[in-house]
Length: 282
Image (cartoon, rainbow, N blue to C red):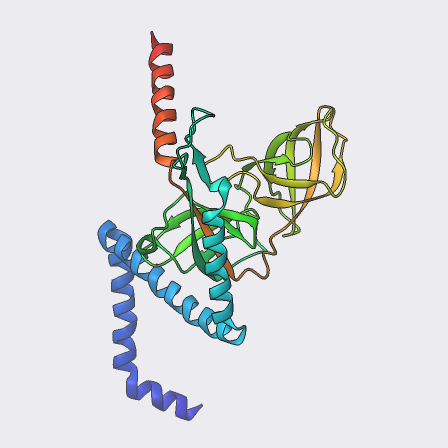
């Protein structure tokens, strides 16, 4: 105890300086928008860098080099798949080989941080704006839906996963083609709900749920999960419990899905909505 007191007496001026400096910086960042935003931006990269260092050590222990190669090959295979191309053919008799153009691009990334036990979980990946990753891009892993990019800095991006209370995606039953919405209401990180499918549509445990392709986040037919059980206590719609295909507790490598047509589609939709709003005011 005497040694601690002596140490404090010896360095009390330096410790007092550090305390006052911390208070001054806190006041600066809280009361100045520019400095505050710069602090948040740089701190995100600092924290992301720490997570990245930790993930690199874990990756080495888990044969990360092999996983990197497999992930890259998987991205290339998915990018070359026929369903990622938009058909341009207008004449069934044409022999023109350029009848389709690519619509979806896949980029590899690694998970450097993730949460699974909260109401609003997030995942951090090590690819950001410098890697052509932006908000509203889809994320998949091992052929299963994971989530959507919420925001991105230069080197990192934050993913809103399926296991987030605000997540919602358009999905369908592979067997019948009926579509509904995928949501998560907390609890088990491997169980989500599919809602808005009418009771006249047959659903049974073991049925496969896939993406509908109605959004610009994911191509059609990306695996979501399998039906665990069905609750028909509601009068009009099934409540379908789905066991997710992605294991959110063991995510490592992911693919970020970019829709080349997203801007065109969004621009057209916004134009129509603006025209409808203008017409309604007349």
